[in-house]
Length: 407
Image (tube, one colour):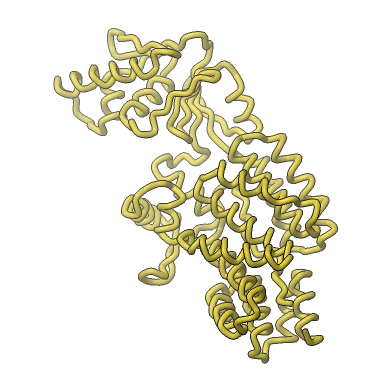
């Protein structure tokens, strides 16, 4: 490797893409193309970065499998930053295997972290945790250890384990001091701020208040009867009743919980569950049927009793009934806004994958949010992306903070 390539790789490793470009911007050999691609990615020009990395992968000879594998890993990271969650995972696995086979421990671990982050984005937490367990961070440099701890914190946050998340971020903060990469330092500090931002809304006795993640954890550990509108489940202690596939029953459960300890009028229940502003005998008959189904679903933790004007929920063994909702008041599209809150640009297909919804459903939500000016789109056709300024604190863990030097 010549001196300019070495200097450019060191500049990228230190988080200085401009310094790297000054050394290789006019060169078109394979190592220079790869480094230019990584530098452009760090500067945010992802489209140009992708083109350069593809060119570099083609320019490397058949015997330079490690260099090509590093280009594939860099492409995979750009795909994740672009929220192209459909990027072929097999290509990343093959590149990681090549790097491990040739002893490139650092970049092989980086490839593993990319897959872990992708799994976190689409909600496959168990698989992400299993993948992370295959990497020993003690053998890695400070920048890689920081990324590892950020992934550990991301899993802990999604499992609502605040102390674990805080401990992991503490280790990340210590590691990033040794790494000395400004972008990575900012990422760690932003992740810390997430623990202090609203994670949910508590609705009880007709009042609302915002909760931090540690307060949500305490609430879930209590003996309260909780209607969790973030996950569409009803819980009390260790008993969990999932109503995610039964929206009518969940709407009834939430309406009853919001009215507790009073009863909920029949016309209110009908409006919330069936979306009808008019009430006739057919609606009342349907309401009786659905309340019977809800009573059967919740029989182990609560009863639903009829009153003169409606129904009231009566928990078994709980003195408090609360609703745990998303921190955004706009419940209908809160999940879409929460994901877009990371400040990155998302395609409708990636959003649909992350939300577990159909692409058409996501598109309708985006159109409504765009009409009210809460999201904006750029590009056309398959390159169309959606974005919004951060709405709530959600850590952005894919800022290309580490370099993939081509040796």
